[in-house]
Amino acid sequence: MENAILSNQTYFDDVTQLIGNTPLLKLNNMFKEQEVFAKLEYYNPTFSIKDRAAFYMVKKAIEKKQVQKGHTIIAATSGNTGLGLCLASNYFGLNYLCVTFDSVPNEKISLLKAFGATVVICDSEAESDEEGGYVWVAEKLNEKIENSYLIDQFTDINNPLVHYMDTGHEIWRQMNGEIDYYFSTIGTGGTITGVGRYLKKMNPNIKVIGVEPEGGIYRKVFKNQKYNFDTHLINSISDCFISPNTDFEVIDDIIGVSDNASFNMCYRALQNESLCIGTSSGCVLRGIEEYINKYDIGKNKRIVTIFPDMGLKYINTLYDLDFLESNNINIDKSKKDDNLKKYITQDFAKYKVKVAEEKWD
Ligand SMILES: Cc1ncc(COP(=O)(O)O)c(C=O)c1O
Image (cartoon, rainbow, N blue to C red; front, top):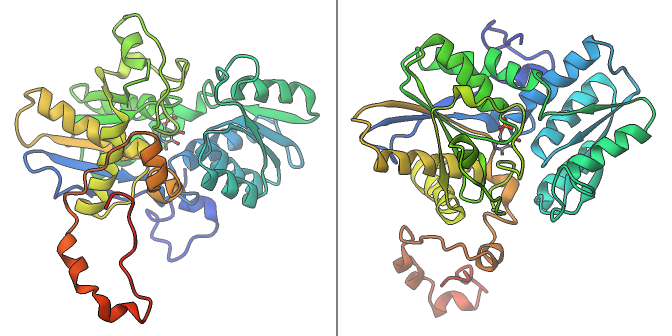
């Protein structure tokens, strides 16, 4: 994709030029023996990595005349692809029908509606690709709606392709080619497949490690073991089916991480690196930590990962104490300095000044 920053422009001609070329940050405080770098994909216009694939899939469909101005695109998504498709449909003058499910955080649903999408919410208890599930409903709606085009991020090869051409290439360039490990979560598999393929083409010795919630099935399938899907709290990754866009050939290993550890990692990233990351970023970061602790990989390895989206999308879940409590997530509060509270004494009471209440006090 044409990259405005690389061509030294002083301003961007349109919002699509803000897609990609995201910053890569070294995490200096959390990892001492290894060099860990995170690509901050919330710098994309709708604050997630999905702007890349969403825009590219629509662009290609238009080029192939599968869809044109005034037509409707339909997609099954857990939200982030939906937001990227809002951007693409605004840009190309399309209508957009977003099919999602009831456990997607309200913040994302509100944003989708504000963007102008028609949002259909399905039952999250239904298996995604079976009757009533969000993938199934999207397919049925596509059969019914005139001049509609189904964007299927699970099978569309343009999804991994854009990560091969852009994301993988950017990482290689930003790391000067000096990479030992690439860690990634797996949703559609577009990212791990595209980036993994590119990095391995450039240097076959780079290890590609997938990270998923404990309830996920990818690591069991990868190891040819029996599996059972268990629900989990990490958004947008590890659904109950294997996405055809996941190429196991590029993956060296897949590990599982608990919801509790992933959520705690988000708080640690906030307090130690000042990074407000989403749940899948917490999951992959925790995966790196567990992998390093479990395997003797030696010191000073250069490890790169991607933070797909930002924590502000999860204010009512990840950062909501009631949500955490009702889902048995225990956040480690050791960093908090409770001594400071003693300064808020009776003297302030007459001004109605008090310390903000916290459930876990
Ligand atoms: C927050 C978040 N993390 C991770 C992923 C996984 O990316 P991929 O679908 O490329 O595997 C997604 C995809 O929607 C996402 O939205």
